Picture 1 (cartoon, rainbow, N blue to C red):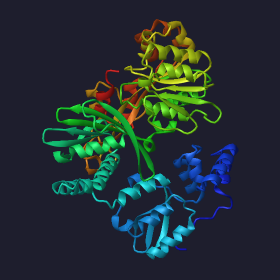
Picture 2 (picture 1 turned 90 degrees about the vertical axis):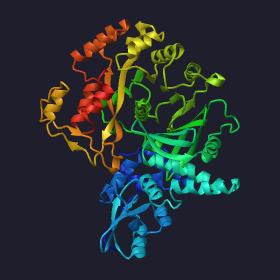
Picture 3 (picture 1 turned 45 degrees about the horizontal axis):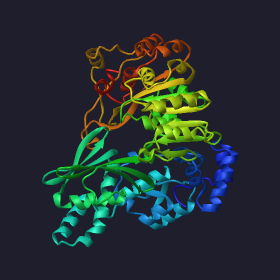
Picture 4 (picture 1 turned 180 degrees about the vertical axis):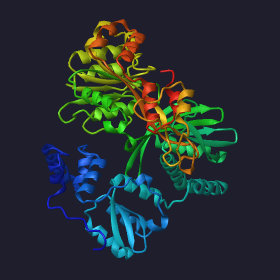
Length: 558
């Protein structure tokens, strides 16, 4: 053994996690049974069962082995260094080389106790090994990206055009499949939420929506339009022969260890069928309340709300504001091992362990209302109703809260205060609101400043004055501006963060609820010092997460 030798543990991993209070005895017992059945590693089984997150397990292993952790997403990889260890062995052992000096190789491993793998790498490379730690899914994803041996999408398109020129239809099957896989992989690397295939008179334009902005990706020759669209329709179980009517479908694929679900919408246009694929990446879903970036007080209030025996918790905002992520994150905080949790969703975007999820299908009469009536006979403790959009659903939701159930749902309103008159408009009896409504969370998504190229504003005081904003009382103001670099495609922003407005319905608000007057509710909230959406956005700007200009663009009128 060379440079790094972790101290070998005297207990098995499951027992060490139990000692650290990261899992319960019952969870360990269930996991050991599942491990015996599947033959998987105990850490993998615990993650599959939802008993521990990959981040928590990785942090524990790193601390246990006294190994530093690394955010592998921020590492710039050298292809020559990665090539020092065979791809197949990297994948088998859950490791990836990220750097070397004259006699030392830096290795990122999911299991820093795997001394056999460390020995093997030292034998292969004739270098001493230094170990860092990262979650296995992150390592495998980077491996897949770094060792993409099938070439680029441009090369595949060229190959397809060559085949098309020879009129050899059967020969195009494999590269057509590869083209779709590479298109999806490119979208995931760009953190895109949607892929648009837009037919034009002379070409097929492909665009991707990243950070809420639709950007051009590439132009595909017109000859490949129909085969590409047909392939996507086959994957989504759509009728390939039907080109006159809109169709909706979905399919799943894997990228590394990440399972991706894609929702497909097909719309006829004058130049052919337009396809939009929404990428639902469960690996990108925030599943822990601290990861949402709320103020500490608001996070504590939401965490408390998930422990209530009954009541309604609403998340409001326009389409694409991150409501689903917040609902899932709140639901993940519920104790699912001692409570019966059900969801009604249209569609199911992410699959959660130990939760019974039901997709809405209005074509056969399974509406939110019909599904909710049935769920109330399933002995539930906690319900998630994806969207409250009609009178029947709203009334049944209130009835469920009155009969001892905790209900989560979403509404389309501009702020938290507008949810109250909206519920009354949907037919909820006003006098029932004080007894059922517990919390309303309004939110928006603002673009996150690129951490690589963001620069401090030279005169933040002048910028604050230009927006008629007072400086913070407790410190000198620091604000940042977007610049642009290759890492963020010269946009100045990379990713998005949420801003929140958390209205906890306590005693002073109760008399105002039956009136349904959102302005009175807002005035009382301001009087009590509650931060509004815009205020939370300014907080994010002072933290360096975004810019004041972005906050004004998204939340000024809320």
